Amino acid sequence: MRLTKSTDLALRAVMALAVKDEPSTARDVAEAMRVPYSHLAKVVARLQHLGVVETRRGRGGGLGLTPAGRTASVGRLVRELEGVGDVVDCEGETPCPLAGACRLRGALRRAQEAFYASLDPLTVADLTAAPTGPVLVGLVGSGPPGPPGPRD
Image (cartoon, rainbow, N blue to C red; front, top):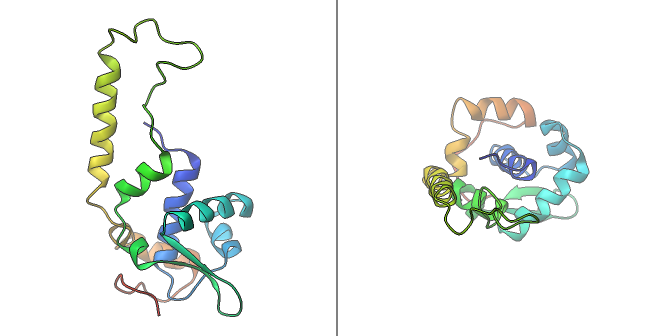
């Protein structure tokens, strides 16, 4: 299974925001992640809709994680970002002739759920623990990551 580029970027953006003590601009995060601003803006909109990221306008504004975003299950985030769907499309434009009797589809569905289940116990805070946190701090320029919790 391969994650979409959008999900990959969303997870990396959430990790970058998790180590920031103050709000970041979307442009700063895009630059740190080396992605186009337009791609990041779409991802941020989706994360905001999921209640993981909050945006604030004006002086001192920017992007930040919500308290729920800091403790979010990585498995839940990936499920929501990837959407519902099987690993293979057996009934797409050209339906598979084996669809009615195929054992592969079920096996792939179980493997996909095992993939998500292995991510369920991980939180965003877990992803930013050492050694990743210090590397992220170097990329996004902040003080040392503090414990997960509400933002001031």
